Length: 346
Length: 76
Ligand code: SF4
Image 1 (tube, each protein chain N blue to C red):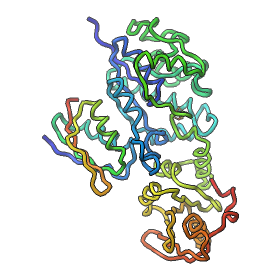
Image 2: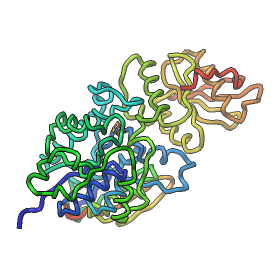
Image 3: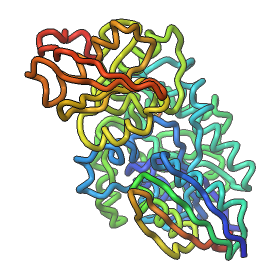
Image 4: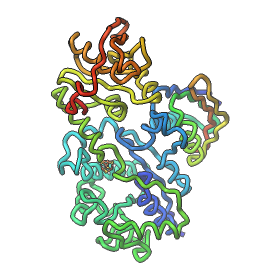
């Protein structure tokens, strides 16, 4: 009997990559999943932070998919390396700050290295021609295969019939006529296949797999780069852009104001790294100050912080400011709603 | 049998799972790993990761907002 072939499937947690893996498993191939963590993934984070989402226990969709399929899953931290993809995408950005095509190329390239190191034979993705306007078009399919270096080791089981034969097909590791010819934006063929395999309760992310497809998130990211005068970030930046209300009165500083209890708790963890403030005479949110504020700026920040607490209509609110271990008290009059221009909201 | 400890506090999922995965790679079947984390998501994600990768969760516990999981490494 010939040796069982092995494939690594890129698992995003969505339906398409789940189906692609299943189609190949059905042909007797040993499949294991790879999931890349860029830091921007929609998975988990905000659910973990915000209290209001707690009622529904969150699950990690890629782990869930792997469990449904009965395959191993390798989660790979690419936070550092991914910076180059996001900061200098050769193929540019999508509608927002999402460098989808470069991201795909990068992930398939990583998968190519992974299969070489782990003795696997080929790579599977859930890509479908025409499914996404930027990264999944007829013209981009060969670009991903070529620039990732994967070449014809890259099999897209859901649209393989619309593409040239790949090595796994030519070698008979998988039968081409058992693969699919999905194309376009319709989700119907995927839903029918899911039903055939008995998959339900799968995740259906609205935008894409990450926060970079989100308009508000992208605006905040660009604002951060502009204020710092350089395009760079670390994981804390990535996380903090997901949390709170961001208000920038001037280029030197911005406020990150917790919107509810869960965010308040989350921001507490950053008090050693940032100047923080909260009202003490009234109940109110915790605020972090990012940047280099002057003492005048801090006064303004205290007035804004007070505006978002229960003392918003009071004549005076006492706000405690903590900068490293230095603590002081500011007595301020909260700003009124009209005194906070729309343009300050990032 | 080795007993190891992993501090995954202040990390948000899936980072605690990634740290567990990387640590377990260096361990042998039968070794035990005790993990402490602050993201409640670990109570779902680490057991799920163990189930798919053939490791066994021996104990889970929440104490003062921290989550403790003890797992036994399976054959890798
Ligand atoms: S949505 Fe995000 S993770 Fe998905 S391909 Fe685009 S940039 Fe990459």
